[in-house]
Amino acid sequence: MKSLQKELVEKGLSDACTGEVEQKNTRTRGKSSEQLSHREWAELMGVNRDTFIRYRGSVRRR
Image (cartoon, rainbow, N blue to C red; front, side, top):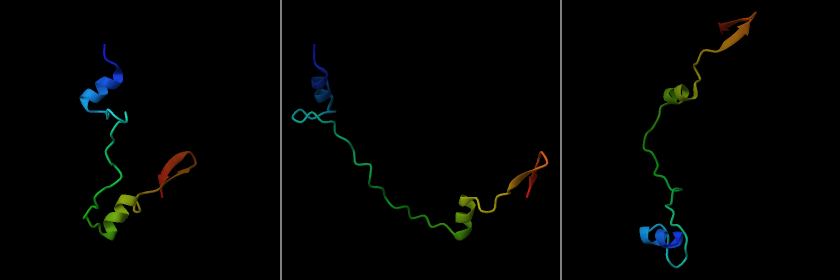
């Protein structure tokens, strides 16, 4: 019967000497080349949305 450490080494998930699991570098990201206009930024942030207010029990658009 094999130990868990030996099985990890055989599958390539662990290094035989150190016993640590290799991890990929996920911190680096490529920059997106997409340029958004001022109107598109306002749309994403929800600047021109309707606002609703409760007045005497009913919900009305402001």
